[in-house]
Image (cartoon, rainbow, N blue to C red; front, side, top):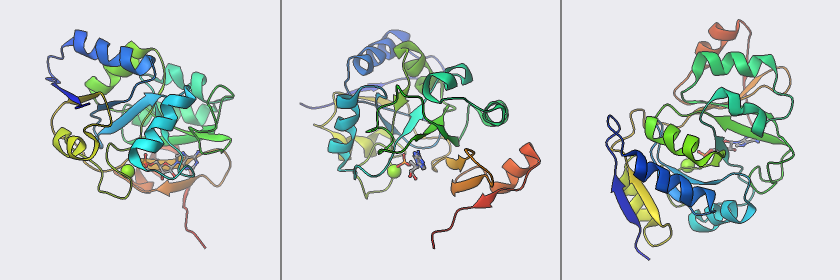
Length: 220
Ligand code: AMP
Ligand code: MG
């Protein structure tokens, strides 16, 4: 089936349409939506079958864990287990925004979402359409970029459509992504805290905020 494409004005969003999108997600369907970094291919993060659909549709290796998106820092405890004060400080400083924080996962997060790891990647995006959809759905949303695996990350709805039409029921078109670059990923489970992926937020930005040295992960 061809994907529905709903243009949404970020400055005056049609809440009834965003509620429809949220309902689809709640029912285990996939929805493409904008964030400030890239477009996301979203699914109910706690629904194994829904998350499996993400991997199937993208052709994404099962070994590549997903980022779980939340609508407020208060939702951290839904996804993480024993959320440390540092996570809340980072959230205060950088959320909503392009920083993904790796924490110990809550048992409710299925292994498929984290590719079998006992940690989970969490982010609160800085895009009102994304935030409204997540809030209305009432659940955390797992979402990698809305493109086929190995292809460039989609930063507008047209590119997401070219890759995913026929494979997803709904694409929310919220225009061009403001940043257009992936989030920075930081692991704060144990010291030294490590940046796993450098994105829009720099190592120096984080060091300045937490007054601590961090390392950049390098594969041996
Ligand atoms: P993307 O494909 O852009 O959604 O990227 C997700 C990134 O977050 C990838 O680099 C993943 O390897 C990384 N990631 C997600 N979850 C974890 C985790 N639990 N531990 C380490 N890295 C993770
Ligand atoms: Mg990607």
